[in-house]
Length: 274
Length: 263
Image 1 (tube, rainbow over the protein chains, first blue to last red):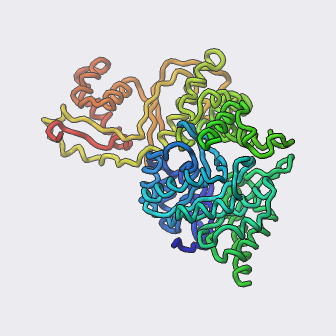
Image 2: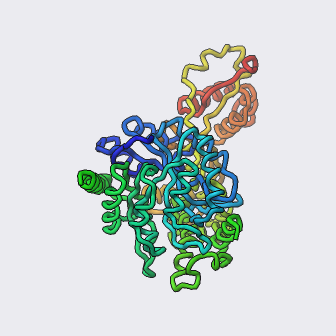
């Protein structure tokens, strides 16, 4: 079982000094794995210092678990070393592919929801979990296109995948909302469709509505109203799950994110009490 | 279509803008399909331009945001990222800048690109320990000629042939840039890190000769021999010892070896 760490924030370099100076009341920090897959220097220095005071989880973008290319052994080796160094409460990455043929697109490319994709993913997830000696959390990604070949819904795919690979899920509520607009489905059906026992963490973030009407997952703004509403309903469905806010651009002062996290905390507590 | 082909075609479409992928996607004939696919096609380029801007902030300031963006997009079209960590993307920008415009501008831009790439390498180089100032006291006087030095992984040397450092300072300290691009006689620089602080300083030709020799694995005796080309023979040992003390106190050296210590 993964512990419930309460309410956390993404760890960003802009906030290193504020965190160390002010020791804010945050349940955990989520560090972007790749920022620390480096030999040494300032990022690792700060990561170690912050880890000394807070629970930490690692969130990667380069595992490329869905790619039809071998899993990069160097990446896994580096990840394993970082895990040994910071002893995260858990590690996560995305249900996506990031490139094939040695190229990295540095994007979270969507998977088709097919039996073929399931058969491809399940042994790869098991392989990664064997190498790392722990279960991983996989996050549902935002997508702007869907595949004609998909044979099931995204939530059906997540449910089958997590059961067959025995992995956990990182439920990004913003991504659920974004995809519900982009691909025209009921986000509540998604929330009802994910297996509650597999959801070990929740992400919240901001997004940007495009002139054409579809939404891009930008992480550059406060959480949008429809996502707040969906999060409230998610709390009712899933109960207490470790939750954090992701912010990757237009990063505000730490105090602003702490205030936003207080809203998350209050809302989750109210729904749990209800 | 098999998953393998689907991913290859999608990636090809992102890298080349050639619409190989399409029928396999829902809504390919829809009015917003170009914008949706563009989120991947343009997103790929804008993410890499942003990453290059983080690695090369002074180059960006010197070229201007628009020209920098154009040049980096040219680089991205010819050079896909092949590392899982975007931090390592952009090693060959120096080569691109070496062909940018005319001299002396291209000399400045190439020097600036190399300088900033080295700063990035120094920034996250391994945290290897530095040799204690009194550690060499253990070396017997008769063994000194044979002692060799191991430099920390963060140590970098660079020869600059332009006023690129002035442009870097202008961008870093938000002060006025030099009046014009200029080539200059070769100047030697040393870059390294103490703790988490990245440092650099200019190096005179004698020290550069010694430092490059020591970094290449020359023994203290060989260094002294090397310096006889530019230092009075009676002063060579003292000069080499003085340089060595300086390197140790500046935390450039991580260890030393003696022949009989070899396995």
